[in-house]
Image (tube, rainbow, N blue to C red; front, side):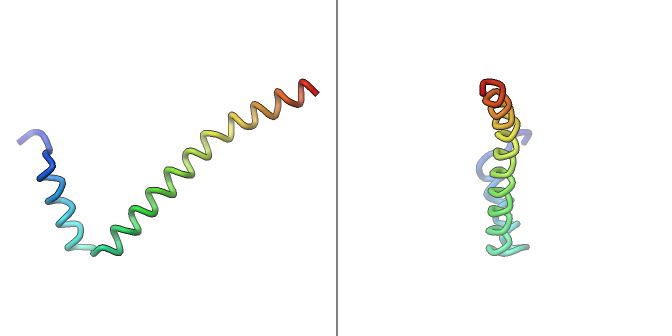
Length: 59
């Protein structure tokens, strides 16, 4: 009873679908995807700024 199996997660998903419907599930997936994309972009910004500074020093 301590571990979650695939059946537990399927039950949670079924309850979520019954409560909110499939459109809400699609919105959650879309929001999660955008959040991950924004996080990756934010992680790349410091690297790009560092590269720009190095290029400025070389020029």
